[in-house]
Length: 105
Image (cartoon, rainbow, N blue to C red; front, side, top):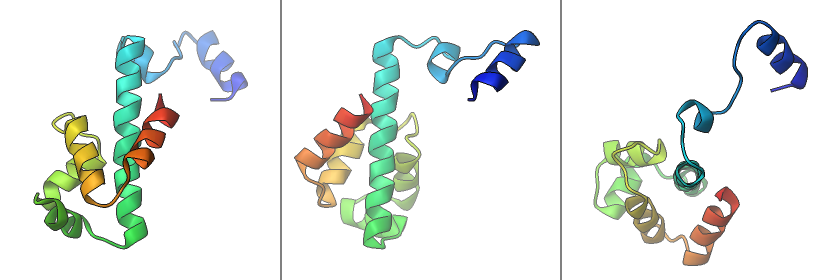
């Protein structure tokens, strides 16, 4: 957000912050959320680059299309373990997964 807009909002009584502040997340919790979002985004990008549908991915990992959609959305019901295992099953390397995590943290 541009500084001028932030100043204008604050002068009108609004409190400006980020999602971590709003949700009162600890630094560790905020980092966890960022890692999960980055891995989910990477999964979606990998699928798009390969020209696969969510159904194609589901078949490759032995899951359902709706589960793949939840993984790509970083839904709370999806674990990091599931996203990482899915990325690896789709051909991502451990180094690639590590780089995604490192950039997010």
